[in-house]
Amino acid sequence: MYRFFVYICIFITNTRKHMESIIRQFALANETGKPRPTGNGLINDSFVLPAKNEGETSYFLQRINHHIFENVDGLQQNIRKVTEHIRQKLIASGETDIDRKVLRLIPTKKGEWYHRTPEGDYWRVYVCIENAVSYDKVTPELAEAAGEAFGRFQRQLSDLPFSELCESIPNFHNIEFRLRQWHEAVQEDKAGRVGGCAELLREISRREEEMCLAERLFREGKLPKRINHCDTKVNNMLFGTDGKPLCIVDLDTVMPGFVLSDFGDFMRTAANTGAEDDKDLSRIRVDMEIFTAYTKGYLKEADFLTETEKQLLPYGCRLLSYMQAVRFLTDYLNGDTYYKIQYPDHNLVRTRAQLRLLEEQEKARAAMEDVIRKF
Ligand code: GN1
Ligand code: MG
Image (cartoon, rainbow, N blue to C red; front, side):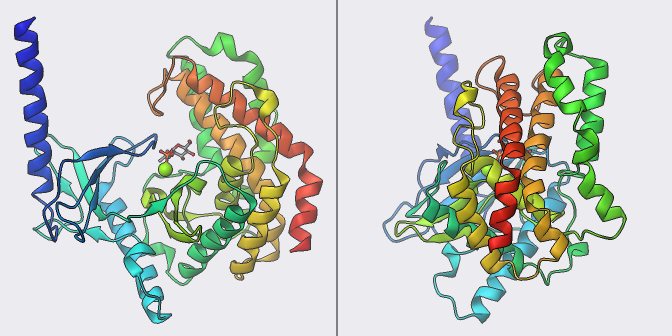
């Protein structure tokens, strides 16, 4: 028992020393205190590094999940280019408080945008945006503000040639690719779970063709790609204590894509009266009030959209719920290797909830199209 206690103490001391040596690599402006784990993202590990002294800068330290983001260098270059581009726009428009309106990456003392440890882990540091909140649920007021913020984000980047960015996850929001991964998972049945999912497999299969529409239109030259955020969940936005949007965060997936996918991903998480992983499917419906408010804010800022892009926005909502269902189910069939889970069937529960949302969005299609026409 005593020996076990000593082992634990040695482990904790080593972990602390290890963290300290990582923090020392970065060109921080001041000393920081004990790292505090934070956030509920499904992918990276995040810590706040609180300023030692009042009035100094706190930082945000993240271990980048390089199993998911295999090209960390390309990813960090993307983030640097995008934040720098937005920073220049903010400066030009006379904005103040810029470090709260766009993320600022901190380089290492060697001038690199990430630090790779001898064990092969990748770490990065941002300035921490303090006195800011994020929400998992929105009100119509917050949704309108979020629509403006994501619309503005896309507009600020609309003159940055996207050939400058890499796909930090190749084919990330490409449904044809996601369906190929799903077909493989079904075929291989690594975790022996296919037998229990017949109904879900049917629901996915019967929509395959319809859901590949955007990729077809792109090949025909009828739908453009632009720089997108690709994870437009409401909890990826920070708001000030006055309720005004400050900043878009979680820029790992910023890359070329269809605007309808950013619009759809927001609606998937915000315009749902239930949770992404709700076990009670009767709670899941389209929240038309949130849908309307976000659309209003978004279309106010997104003045660069083509007619086709506007018309496809409700389709984007269905596509993103569908794509998320396909991704969750693929992970379930592969034995839960991608998304962090809280209990054994979590990915299955998530899949069911996303498919139910899709059905609700199918029912609400005409109502959504009316709202788009109105704005
Ligand atoms: C992941 O880690 P988080 O919650 O920001 C995922 C998104 C999914 C989301 C589902 C890189 O985002 O694409 O929509 O989970 N990010 C990645 O909750 O795969
Ligand atoms: Mg996130």
